[in-house]
Amino acid sequence: MSYIDSDSESGSHHGLSVISRGTFMFKERKIFAEFEGQCHPHTNSAQLHRLLTYEAPPSVLTKAGTVAKRQPKDTHVDPYANYY
Image (cartoon, rainbow, N blue to C red; front, side):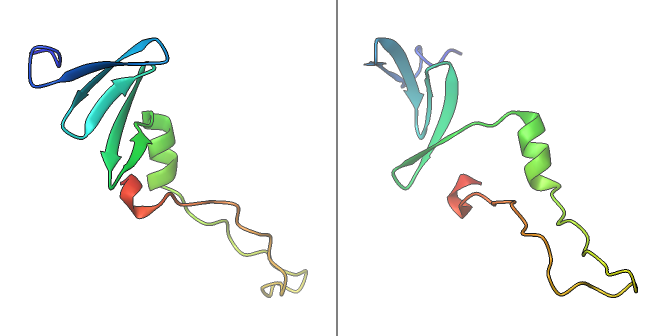
């Protein structure tokens, strides 16, 4: 079954067709899910794997083997909950 044959709507977004069904849409060659008014793009499997298997880096130790007072900043940013 194709999206157009079902209860989908087709529109135009900057000259490209937009196909939607329920809260999912396909536009600009990408799949999006809408939740609470925000569109979230579908991510590829590599990005999703990195996100779901993320582990914080280990603590930096001093020469004596104790945990250093100053640790490098963790730059990992978890998406908002409605992303999932």
